[in-house]
Image (cartoon, rainbow, N blue to C red; front, side):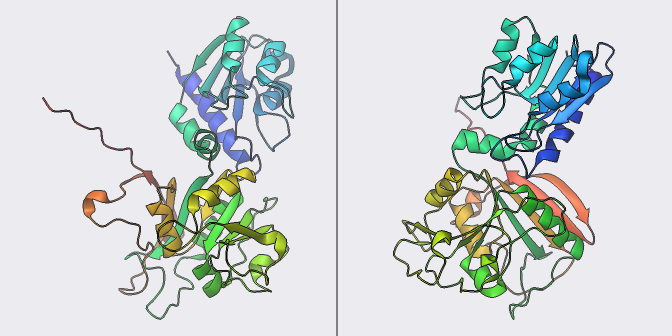
Length: 369
């Protein structure tokens, strides 16, 4: 049975893992806490960057000789393979750890099996403690491994009545400086930031991370199907970060930098590009998480395709009564087909409210008597 001390240690490991968001991709975020027989923390660490030591190694180095006979709490099953670093299962064995508690099993077929290796060597191994919390913190990487595509977070900012701009198209600024600063945190945690042609044409966004020291700049992606929105000199083409302009295979894109053009097939139905192929192309480039900041049309396309894994809405205490809504046609024609969400967090950000939600699990099908 898990004790209060076990839960406290694992929750600390989950908190540590979150420090790696934005810097470990394409690797997962992982945290590790080591406690001695009396329950005192003797070492802790987290995976800080891709190619660097894993969380367990940082924690073992901090613990030193005190690791022998101790318990290691890890948010993800210790890896069992040699990549750019050695297998963490072997590092734990070499340090003399006697018990390992991990939250989530590793779904990567190349790295899984660390738990079995530890058990075979006589280590007491337990799995599943705070698994839901650890899964949520590592959702991007787990989604990429399980589904073979990047994790998609759709962010929008709107008035309390759901408008993203006024009837005359003015929109700056609906939300507060505090909310806008929080969006840069989301950008810093994402591998790619994606907008559509409407946003590119209207706002000429730069899409870089600002105000966060040491942040890794995400890949900037513009879905510009007909190669008509992004012009030479656009801010998204500056040197802040790499950029991809996704255009249709038949679109004339000679005015764009050759290395920035990503040609994709058009969608089989409706306007735009094939989003499955877009996400596959990004995944191939090592992108494990995408922040969709585009307008209502692009958001509607992602929702219609069933490719939104999380929604973050910034709601300002403002009413407009007219103007474009946050979400355009998403292929939902009746209330019974509405995309139901589970709210996971509500937080006040300055005068605004940040609401985070994920698609609700399908209701179980009732069988007849």
